[in-house]
Length: 363
Ligand code: 9MR
Image (cartoon, rainbow, N blue to C red; front, side, top):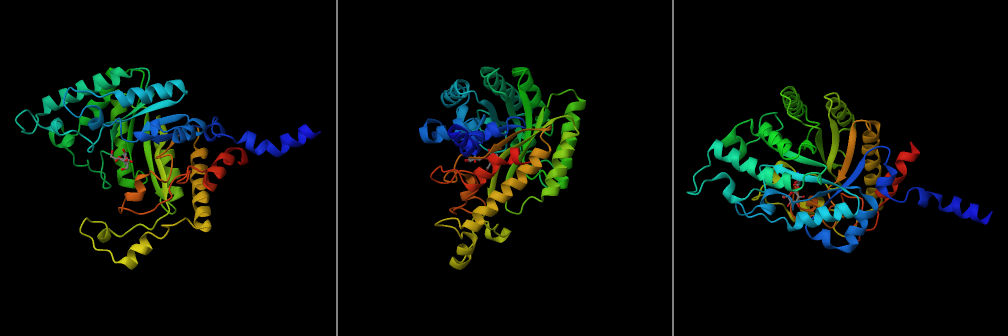
C-alpha cells in the first residue's frame, strides 16, 4: 500500500524524467554544444540527461577545422564524436558551406587574387572529402549549405555565389554525398515562414530532387520570440516542406523575451539613449514570473505545432544549453540579458522545461 502511494506520488517525476525520452515517439531532441562546454561536467550532465542529438555551435565550421589550407585540426571534433559515441547521441555536422566563418585563404589564390571557379570547386570538394570522409558513418547528417537566400527569395550574396555561381549549392550536396553516401544531407536556413524565402527554398529542394541529388531534410532555424513567428504560418511552412518528401528539422531553437530594436537602432553607429536602452534590456537582474510564464507558454505553443507534424518533423534542436551562453544576448544588440532557452544561467530547469517534459503525455 505504502509502495503504491510512493509510486503514485513520484509518478510525474519518474515518467517525465528526461526531455528526449518524453519525445521518444515523436522526434529527436537536440542541443548545440560550444567549444568549452564539451569539457565542462556540469554542462555535459545536462546534455546527457536531456538530449539525444548534438550539434557543434561553432567548432565544426570551416575556420575551426582548416584555418590554414591543408592543415586540419580535428582535435575538438574527434572529442565531440567520441563523446557522442560513448553516450549514444546522434551527431549533426554544422556546417559545410556558409557565407560566414571561412578562413582567409579559401577565396583567394596564392597571390591574393580572387580564386577561379574551378579552383574553388576543387578546394570545396577536397575539404568535404577529407572532412565528411573522416567521419563517415559517425555523423548522422550534415547541414551541407547554410543560409543561401535573402528574404526576397534571391540568392544571398557570398563569395561562393560570386565565384562559383548558383550551382555551388548542388555541387556541395554532390560532394557530401560522394564523401559519405549514407549520411543525411540538409539545407538549413532562418526566416523560412517568410513566403518568398520559403518559395526559393522549396524550388531549390525540388530542383535538387529532380536532378537526383540527395537532400533529406530542411532545417528550419528557430530563432524566435514571444510573438514571432505566427504559429499558423509556422504550421503551414512545416506542412509545405513535408509535401516535398523530405524530413523537417527545427534547428537552432531559441525564444527571445526581449523587445526587438528598430532597424535604425541596430547599426554599429546607432546612438541609443540610456532610457531607451533600459526599455530594450529590461530584465538585467532577473526575469519576472509573468514573463517566465509567457516563455513557457510560448514553448508549449511551438511544440504543439511540432508535435502535430511529428510524422514529418524528425528533430528539434535547441541553440544552446543555458541562457548564460546564447547568441541572443548579443544579437540584434550587443550586451543584453536574454532568457531564450529552457535552462537558466545556473543550469536549473525553467518552467518552460517542466512544461515541455509533460506536454506529449498531456495531449
Ligand atoms: O551561435 C553561434 C555563435 O556562437 C558563433 O559565434 C557564430 C559564428 O560561428 O555562429 C552562431 O550560430 C549561427 C549558426 O551557425 C547559423 N545560424 C545563425 C546562428 C546565430 O548566429
